[in-house]
Image (tube, rainbow, N blue to C red):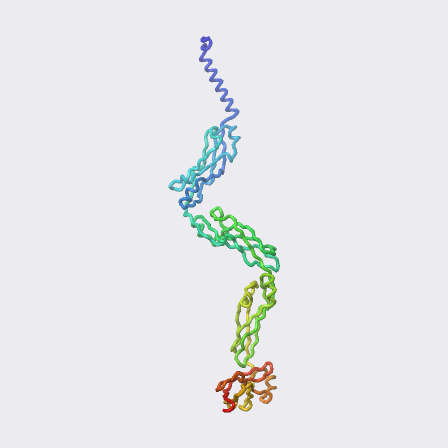
Length: 405
């Protein structure tokens, strides 16, 4: 039996070898080794906290994607998808030149992979100091509320937000804004909004480079009703004696806002402008808000009123009286009085037509001594004048004594 097995052994081994070779040739022809490229594989970054613990932030300079060529059997390659190829950069293993090795794997297929190559081997990053700063959240209303309504206030909760990122990026921040749509609104409401960060040029900044302490902000918008009312401004005080005053102003009506019951209390707005002792024309600006109560808000585009005051010297007329022509009225009981002025000069101001109708004979000067006490003092002289005519203020000395003295 042994002789049968060993007879022609060389020929038998050769036959076995040829059979195996033939099988390998057939196998390679049916499932040959090939190469396949997978481009733009995104590199996954791990252990970012290793930099955060050092108060550093990073930005990828190069190597955020990698091209990989895999060498394997055709059957293996045909079963692979781009998503099967993984690339990882470990930031805890940064070199002194801030480069991390890109490690490429094909999980679940490593035994079947004959070889794999990649176009780049490292990811390079730039490091910068981490900076955190607080910003007030500004609420911006988009659109217009319904006619007859006004946005009183826009409140964000929280109203302060912390923003972290690279120092150079944080230094560019101008404001943090949340936008809320108020189009057609007729009542107060609450909504949520996503904070947006803008730089000094008013450009929206890349949120991927920033870390915000909150992702959403609650916004409350309070609305008030509006009302258009007349504005009346009158003069306060009197101009210099002998001068007449006329006042004009703009606007004549303004828009206010408030709760309905408070608006109902404001049918019109009154204001005063002091012209005491003035004798020259005046132009001025006054704050209209000074004329309204704190329960309503002035929302008119005109926050100030333009005032023009015209002051003109009136016509005058001089009248002379002696002391006997001055009536002493309301002398207290038990007292006597007499003027210490032998004559008196009176100046009247007004329209010429009115002045021409007046004379010393139809105007009787008087001094009201009600409440006077014993002694000598100056008392104002009065005249019963028609409308449009004024008296230059005048006082004369009067002595008051006991009736028996």
